[in-house]
Image (cartoon, rainbow, N blue to C red; front, side):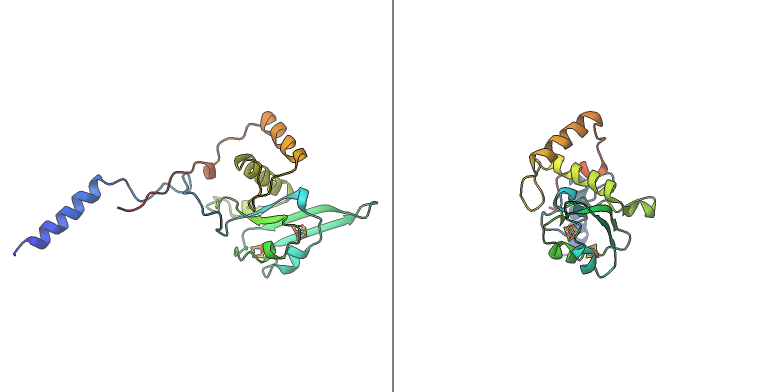
Length: 178
Ligand code: SF4
Ligand code: SF4
C-alpha cells in the first residue's frame, strides 16, 4: 500500500526518540570492561622480582627494567617502566611473567590530552596498581588476594590522599540497543 514505508520509517524514528541514548560521554564516562579484556597492564611491585622476562618477551620494546643486586641476592628494581604509547596490548609480557606481577585488568584510559603521559614509571604504575586493588576488594585481576602489608599500605595512602574520582571509575552500566 502506498505510504506504508513512510509510516514504518516514522515508527522507527519515534521509537528511537524515546529510547535512552546508545552513546556515552567517553572519556568522562566509561563502560564496564570484560574481566578477560586485554586492557591496560597493571604492574605489581610486590610480586615482581626484576627478572626482566617481560621486557624480553615484549616485541615492541615497551618495558624497561633496570636492576641492581642487593646484598641478600635479590634484585633492586631501580627502574621499571612501561611505554603505553607503543604498547599494542598483545599480552605477551603477561604470559611471560613467571610471577604474575604484570597482568591485564587496568582501566582503558588512553584518551589523553598529552601523549607522553602514557609513559609510566614505577611510581605511576604503583599508583595505578594500588588504585585498582583499592577498587577491586584488594584482589589482583587473576583473583588472588593482595598480601596484608600491601592492603595496609593502600589503606594508609587512601587516608592521606583521598583519591579524586577518576574518569575510569565513573562507570555506567552498558546500555543495550533495544
Ligand atoms: S602488551 Fe605486548 S606490546 Fe604491550 S608491553 Fe606487553 S608485550 Fe609489550
Ligand atoms: S617478568 Fe614479571 S617478575 Fe620479571 S621483571 Fe617482568 S613483571 Fe617483574
